[in-house]
Structure formats: C-alpha cells, structure tokens
Length: 555
Image 1 (cartoon, rainbow, N blue to C red):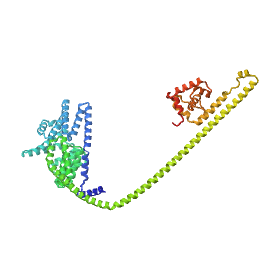
Image 2: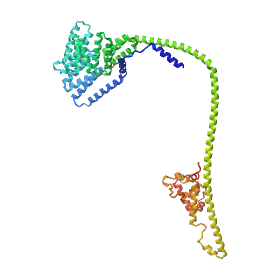
Image 3: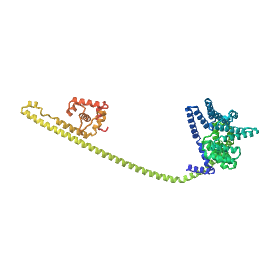
C-alpha cells in the first residue's frame, strides 16, 4: 500500500512539468536513434561499390566506379573522399583519360575548399584549362569556384576584396546554371541559388526550391539543401513556425541520406535553446550529434563552428540539471513527510485492528485444524480403499494360482493312477507267469513295458500343459535370456520342446541330469548335451541356470 501511495504522489508531482511534443521533432528523434543503422547501410553500399571496382577489368569502368565512390564519400567522410579522388586522378593519368583526370582535379579542389585549404584549391583551379572541359566538368569547375569565392568572402578581413569575390561568385553561379541540364532538379536548385544570391530575388528562388522539394527524394543532398534554404526564406519573412518546421525537415534529410555536414541540426539546436529552456536537453543532444558528425567527416570548419556554440549550451545545461536535482530533493522531502503521516495512521489502524486480527487468527487456526482432521480422515479412507483393492487383487491372484495348482495336482494324480494301474497289471502278469513256471518266458517277454512311447508322450503333453498353465509367461521369459537368433518359436500352443522342458525342470528345482533323464524319458547324455546347448545360446553363460530358477518368481 505504501508503494502505491508513493507512486500516486510522484505522478501528482510531475503534473507541474508537462512535456511538449511535436510530430516532426519526434520523427527527427526517431531518425537520430537509427543513425547507426543508416550508417551501416551506407557502409554496405560503399563496400559493394569497392568490390565492383576490384572486379573491374578496364580503366574506363574502374574510373566510373571510383567516381561513384567519391560521390558517396563527398558529404560523408572528407579523408575517404580525398583518398578516392587521388586514386581516380592516378588511374586517369596512367590511362591518359583527360575527362576523368579533370574530374578528379575538380573533386580535389572542391574538397580542399570545404576543408579550408583555399590556396591549394585555388592552385588546382588555376591550373585547369577550361577550354578543354566537358559541360559536366565545367559545371563542377564553376561549383568549386563558387564555394571557394564564398568561403574567401566570409573569412577575409580585407573589405576591398569582398566586392571582387562577390562578383566572382555571381559569375560562377551563371556558369553553373548554363552548364546544367534544363528541367532537372539540379537545374531548378542552381537557378534558385542564382535568384537568391546574384539577383536577391528570394520569392523566385522560393518557387524553384519548392520544385526541387516536390521532385527530389527526401534522403538526398539536394533535398536537404533546398529544405535548409526554405527555412532561411521563412526566417527572413518572420515566419518562425515554418522556419522551425523546415529546419527539422532539412535535419531529417541530412541524417537519413546520410550527410555528415548537418548545419540544419546545429541551427535547430540553437533555435530550441532560444525558444524554450525546457528543450535544453534535446538541443544539447542535437548539438552533440552535429559535433559527432563533424568529427566523423573531418571538416575543420564545421568543428570550429560548433565549438563556438557549445559553450553557450553546456553551462545552462548544467544549471538545468542542478534545478532538476533541487526539484527532486523537494519532492523527496514532501513524499517523506507524507510517508511519516501515513506511518502514524497505519500504526493507529494497526492498534485498533489488532484484537480483530487475533480473533480472526484463532478462528482461522480452528478452521485449519478441522480441515487438517478432515484431510487426515480422507487420507485414511483413501488408504483403506487402496489396501482393500490390493487385497481383492491379491485374493484374485491367489485364487487363480490355487485353481492352476489344483489342475496340476489333478494331472499328477491322473498320471500316478495310470502308472499304478499299469504296475498292478504288470504284477498280476508276473505272478501268473511264475505260477505257471514260465520264468524264462517272463524274462524273454518284451511285449510289455511299464511305460511305453505312447504313455511317455501323453505324460509329457500333460506335463507341458500343466507347467504352462502355472507359468504362462515362461517361454517369453526364457527367450529374454537367449540371443536373438537362438530364441524358441513354439508353433503348437501349450507344448514345450526338450530344451524348454529341461528349463522347466530347472525352474522346478531339479538339478541332476540323470533325474531329468528319467522324468523326460531320455538318456543322461542327451540331457547333458541339451543343457550345454542352452548355455551356448544364452546372452550370458555365467549363472544362466540360476537365472532360469528365478523366472516367474516376481524378482
């Protein structure tokens, strides 16, 4: 109960600090959380291109792939882009391909400009003969020249150079537009840039930036640049809601492309900080992402630019953390006081309910005792029922055994009676022969035998039936002791062969072979041979007959 009360208090305490949610902001946060996945997909595309390059058979195809790899790295990793531009330049020089050689030089000039190496960029551009350039390379040439003059104009302290650099920028923009295929998104974007920078006609630029937005994929550099330019347009118009929305769209495009030069995210971080100090944590996170991307790309200018902004955010962020800690401490004090009050109330209620609880416990104990007694009686009845059932089953088994034993006794009585009758007849015949002085005839008479073959077979048949009636599973149990290929198959029911009869006599306790020979009407040698054969058939010869004696005993 205490835990539930604390939970309620904490929920109430948080009502004073509502969260502000924006669908576009949430989308941006989601994209930022997937940066690692987006990065892995980018790396996979790059690895696939590198493999294609390794498998390329001709310099032309190799140069084409190297140019694609450079384009992928251009806004992703400065050092890697420079590495593949150098590689493209070497291969183009070796193969004598002037088109790709100029293209590689222009890549290096643009990269040096972006990295702040202006003299090197200017040296490369000055050394290129523009009269030999294709339309595509002329576009790249003017693009590199535009960015070089733009950055020089931003960083130069010589005010007399600024108009000159400005004029060169405008000439470069005209060259870019003139060498771009009309009707393409690149053409619309370059036209918008010319209207904005050269003619200061932002309304016309606005129209063409929107055409780019309508046609270009959201995860492309040209879309991100157009979205950022639209954000600037709305800012100048004083429409800060639209300004913020387009900054978010530009940042989403930067990260999903991915571009590691995400200026939009930096500007959005500062905007959130200026608008609402409650968004300080989010704005700090955005700036940290921009810083991480700048370090990854290796752009010194971006790193310097972000490092200027970070000192404004982190002290305030630390103050915000301290303020949250102060609020947490106050909330903890309030909760502690309320807990003390609750403890006092619980103590009073506990005292009032103690007697009722004791009475309830006594009744509960009595009830449990009665349940325990009932359970014991139930267990006793169940045990008695089980015992009675076992006794009934035991009686049934004993009754069956007694019936089989009575049958066996009857068979032995019949056999003995028949044998006594034959002996009586034999004695009468002997007496008659002696009285008639026919002793020699008696000695020579072989016509009468106490037990003939027919009697022996009848005896054995009745023995087989009686034994199997008493031990119905005996044959299968014997087979269980024998090897699989030596087991007995009895075709006629209730009959035993000689070897099984020997086993049955062993089971009945007869050990001597001569005694077995008399009972089975066979010679001692025959019994011995069969006993030996049985042991050879056994899985385990040692103790075979002892195991026979234990069959059908329940052991």
